[in-house]
Image (cartoon, rainbow, N blue to C red; front, side):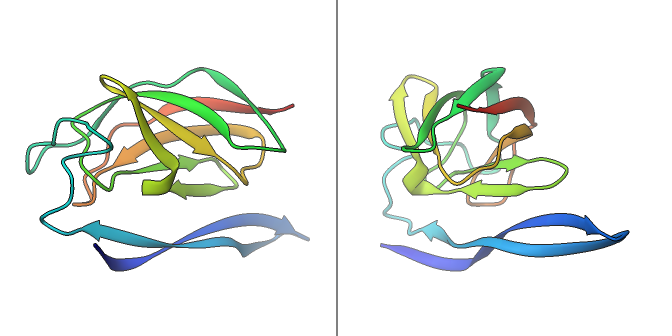
Length: 143
């Protein structure tokens, strides 16, 4: 069982008549796994305490499917159970948690992207202890 440790708010910043306006587009609970949680994301080798996750590969682009989640494979290392992925652009920030990540093979997790606007994003991955990987670019195009 997980313990909710906070909330993540996805927002959009827009300029209207020269004024910056921020609107909330989504809110999600952030959960920290209990000590008995499974080691890493669906079979990943557990991360060492105090190490940053590593994002080794992100495809250069992906096509957003309006009818179902868009699956993007990410190369990863040193991720822990409950890791989350952040997509950040000049206008949007999206955070995808545990339910959106699935291990597909060694050092690869699949991210199910839904509800995201087309654009260029920086992708990073965070472990539940707050340590975050470096960011890599991803272009999401409309289908």
